[in-house]
Image 1: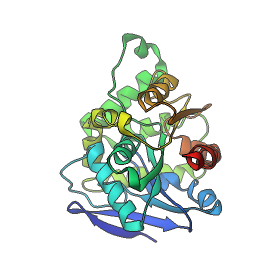
Image 2 (image 1 turned 120 degrees about the horizontal axis):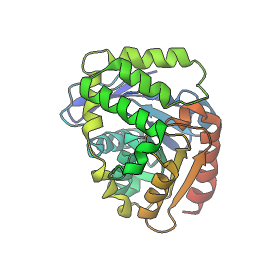
Image 3 (image 1 turned 90 degrees about the horizontal axis):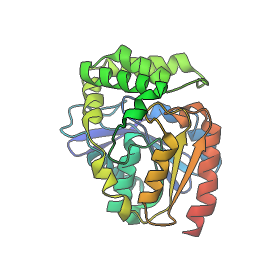
Image 4 (image 1 turned 180 degrees about the horizontal axis):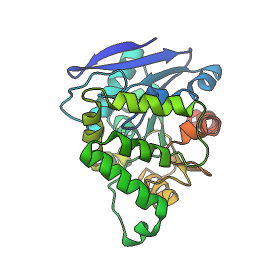
Length: 278
């Protein structure tokens, strides 16, 4: 059942399942909490209370927000955690990975651990050699086109490219929902705003994180020419010993969508080892 929380002049939609320690799931831009549809049941079965959030401007959350930065999103995530009674393990994908970093640094008492899935957490730079990587070149062109022109077809094309090979169960319905949501008034504007927001605010907070962090990257993620190098750089920017990088072979930018069983397995192992020792 969808619930709503008033935050910062808008409304954040979320749903909660299960009981036990709290895990909060936050999706990437141009998407909704439906991205975690296959992740929620096994986490609930493992004994967790799982809350999946629609980011500001996305899914069933309200539109018309004045800011789309990772810092603004972090504020929303922290508000939901306070409302539900934290602390929580905070899981963020793409832009929300950066937001999760900020939340953990700003309110360490509310965040037990962070899981970053294909996160945009550092300032990005493109080297000439990166453009020789076909999937990166194709992904960048689609992302730029969707952002500049507000094109739903270009976003759909990127979304398909970012799920290389294995498609999630119910792929046609998943793609159709993404398309339908982005055609609602204000939703594409939200995606464009997030796309224009730089991740420098998240990168500046990496050294201030005090909880364990799991970074999960796909080997075929089109958002980076070298996903392993990006994940490693995030771990290296954290305080020593807090971060761990895991790669999922064949995954694109949505490892939780393509390979939910592997992502859940990595998360549970992380929670039972790194987090339990913290």
